Image 1 (cartoon, one colour):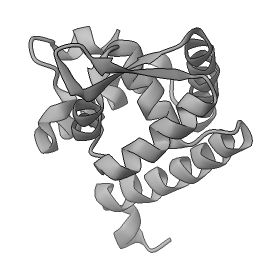
Image 2 (cartoon, rainbow, N blue to C red):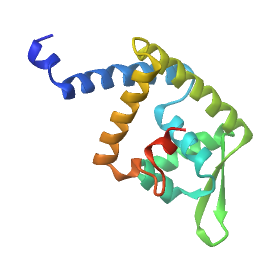
Image 3 (cartoon, rainbow, N blue to C red):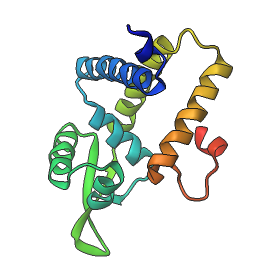
Image 4 (tube, one colour):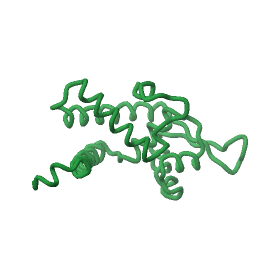
Length: 156
């Protein structure tokens, strides 16, 4: 690699991001899922009963694309959609027991990838890296900073 590129944090971050994303996509695919599936299941674990519109907006997924993703998860018995009792035009979405089990499986895959990818770093370095990445994420996208939570609280 040219020294100039290696000296650039954004080049390194981009290259590492591409590498880990490629690896994660393959692992999810091998498990019969996608990164979108993982994001949806994780979102619903934290915010059950949200509307499809809120999910799409929060995850920045096109609403028509979200419908297809949710259809596939529903066909597999991982989520359940119901009419919103407050507004019959909307649907709310929740995880099923099978959805929670599959999310646990996907979390295990993510943990394995993280452990492999971050193997050269000790726990203190991993935490510092997470804090720095979180700081950058919040600076560039307010969705990363839940209202009323501090950096330490969101790491939990």
